[in-house]
Length: 451
Image (cartoon, rainbow, N blue to C red; front, side):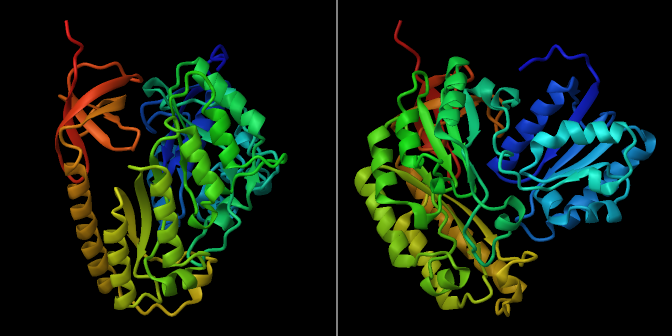
């Protein structure tokens, strides 16, 4: 990235949400630095402050407006500070943000990150027309952000996100993503491979392909995610390939075969959100599969890729979820034995079909079910992780452990966190002997070469 542009000031970005949002912030950071701004340590004193927001959870908009209220004090002290709302809440609320927070300068949706420099220039020129300071358009070319302008946060650790598809064509009754991210738009495979090749040349060892429904990827020439995985596995220097998030309905036989064919570079880990273990609830969620179909796909994956680790998402307390339905979710968890699980209580999102459902599960019952589910999952993870003790694993070293500054941390190909003693180079691979475990991580020591 060209950093020779004259310094125009400093910027700060606050990010909420998933990997897609994190990568969007990398794109926003790249735009800022391309314009000549330097990263600030925090919002205090920054010349530009951007909130890159997520609207998946309940009261997301209110949390953003609460943060804006705090930032208004900074704006009052520095009227020239540019304050922007980006991401999914920006898309969801649009120009309404200016009504509730008139001190905000610009609003950008997640498919409009490339328009940031133009909107900032309008603000600097004194533009007062709200319609010219908001961009929430779903442009066809908005997914083709210049990849050489992205500020890669994980590059020092040998990792990089790569967007392959934006938007979602599913209409799950609980999900706001189609409203905030739009319909599916895919990048051309040649463009993706060019980006990955550039990353490999810079020493990146691991790429993670991103999309709201990443396994729906298909370019104009008919290449799907299967073809992309196989082609990427042939790029020299790339040692690990991940992709997230997958939809079970589009986990095809061809894709499973490709994962096995491209191995071991395609890591033996898959995040495959089930959302519920009840076929009845899955039907009400409009997920496009039932319990039996999901379990059959898990079996097919394990047949092709022995030892594959699975992660999932589960919503507890969906409006039509009975106690029997909830028990079916617990039994599915025990049957599949997920290595990781993001679990949440249901909350209605504006504009979704389930917002009109009669909610038959009270808030206390939702919390009780969530607590029980998380205890079950913790037990599963404790047992699974205990089976790793005594094994030697290869980790991609990420840096110092957040839980223990005396240790370093990294991840196995299966996405297991390993905190370890010994010196290792960040962004490189290291062999680790696993000596103990918990529900959330493995503990070990680096194996030193014999003298």
